[in-house]
Amino acid sequence: MTSPDPSRPYPTGMLDGLGGIAAWANKTREEYEADVLGGVTESTKKIKLFGGGVAGTQSELAGLQSRTQKLEGVIGYAHAYANGGISLSLGSVKYPMSNQIGPVVGTTMTNGAFILGSKGLWVADGQATFDFLNAGVKKISMTLKVYAPNGSEHFKRTSIFDTGEQNTRSVHMPFTVPSAGYYVELWVNAAFGRGVFGGSEWNGLSVNKISTEEN
Image (cartoon, rainbow, N blue to C red):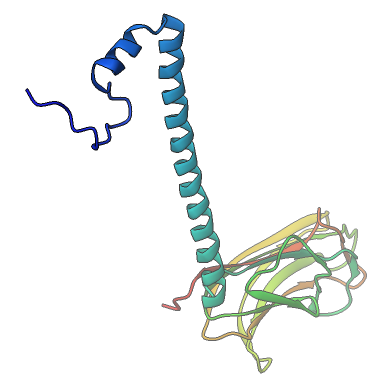
């Protein structure tokens, strides 16, 4: 049998000849367990390091995807409410939103309305709570309206109810727009002197982008 080539390195953990075997045989149980535990600990550190790298990469990819979607107009959302109430007169009036809730992405809040930053399928949700009225015309209504950039009416949906009691109206309205620049407003209508309550508990307007497609 040929002797091992002294120039060849032995793999980690391999017993190098009789000297290595003898050294291993002379170890105490405590020394042997310490060597094994040290190897396991080092391997665990490497696994955790690799895992952390994967998690970090996934987080970076998610952030990049989110930024790309915003640039492409895939993402869009905004939420707001009117802090002050309004006392109604004859005819339908715009109820401008004044207080933003959270971030506004893919839209712009201007003059109490939401200007949409991209074409596609959107959904608007609105709510308004009307004060009571003891006499006279008791019909109330709330309308969500979408206007084109030139100010012409593009789409709308209305909720109507006939009551003298305090009442909350809500509207859920999917709609499409062919380009950026369209804007969404909330309108209310009731008898002269009837009020709509201000504050986030009583009113609000939201828009959410669903798709870049129109059909």
